[in-house]
Image 1: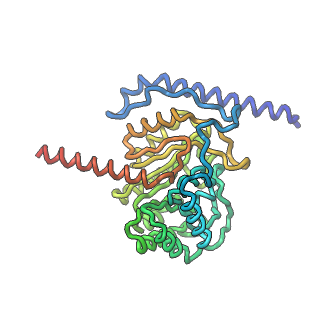
Image 2 (image 1 turned 45 degrees about the vertical axis):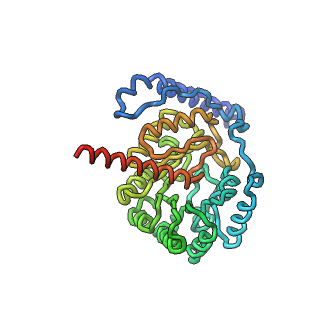
Image 3 (image 1 turned 90 degrees about the horizontal axis):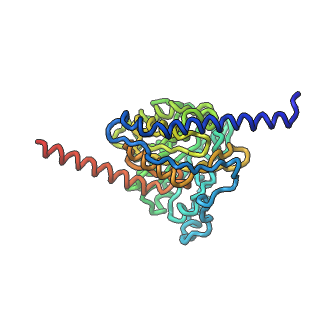
Length: 367
């Protein structure tokens, strides 16, 4: 039986080999930029300057200064924060803001915006980055939840709401009927409210995806979460990289008028070449909006942070994604998939409208 010291030494050697391989790959990525630019489609430009100031989170476990946030109770609009919190408690509703320990909860709630989590607070999947409770047999669905959510939203005077949910692989329809009913009820109560659904993958079942697409939502979001290589380690075994891409592609093909959206976490050990490929993959299936943010470990039971990504690198990825053709890109250490979602939606919508008008003008001039 090997001693503990030998076992520990083996782990460090393995990690050192991984770091060497990643550095070699990233050096190759950086040196190939100028030569590869000519092979890209017209209008697509690779980043000119790759920031080299990533911080190894193993050597430096303390969060860097750019990850400091204002606590929930220190925002100027604390009254709105407390009102929203009270309303949610009274209706026994859940938010992903609380369940996932989102660092932006004070800012978003202080501005009267929250992401409502439907179908309970217990998920059938166990992704290694996520702080939401898991169980093979969650509680039965609350049949009155769609009406309760609609009633709550009718009182909050919002212009935009994000609905998300736990995964419910225990249900034959994956909960798609419940989600669709919730959106229909909300639109009945607040017709002008813009609704974004951060959707499960429904195991790729088209019938379930169709159900939510036909409910009246405005934005269909589904998170790719991480690069392809890391997906088996980061996400539940039922959540597959290609399956997520297929879900996003199918949604866009079925409802071209809605915006599609995804989110990527950085700092899990991905290389820059892998981030580039992930962004290209998402754009190739028609994704309109992408967000990139720093992975933060919710508890010691979850995956460790591999790297602290500097804000300069996030800015670089923003420019790169915009050059790929995404209508809106939010990229920064504290960005999360639902952060200021309404603001992102409106800007993306304005860009789309502007592009359509320019196209119409060019077409009419040609005639």
